[in-house]
Image (cartoon, rainbow, N blue to C red; front, side, top):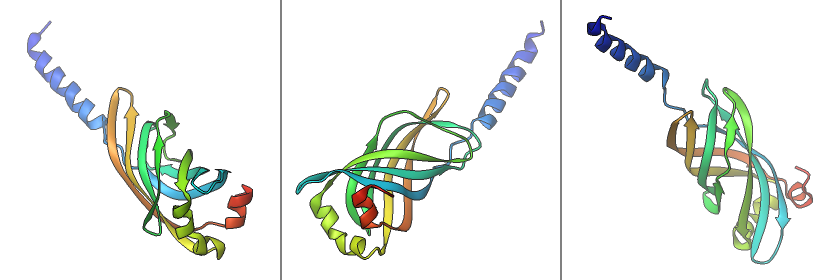
Length: 159
């Protein structure tokens, strides 16, 4: 075997590896699919929600962890933490569940907008840890949308 060719093969293999491993693009936040009250009280309230996202990447990913603050009309509403592994399909929309603990004061700040079904600015800011095979990367996330939240459907759990 000709050993002079080994450095060229190594260089070619490294080049192909670098080209094929592109950095994942962050998910696109599409909005709040549903929200309902699991437990209501005068202190901490438990909400169950589903957020819709889109994976703009041409490859599937595993979402290992998500840590984010959720803001409504630029006021912090709650913190969202997800540490269950979700397999995200390539170039597709997907839903992520969320169980969030919310103080009554955070709900009261937005009660007028909820009662009159006004559009509310929903923002999500934090980090997500994604993996593809043996490669793992933590990327920042920052999404924003404007959406109406119907109070009657939230209270009845019909949205």
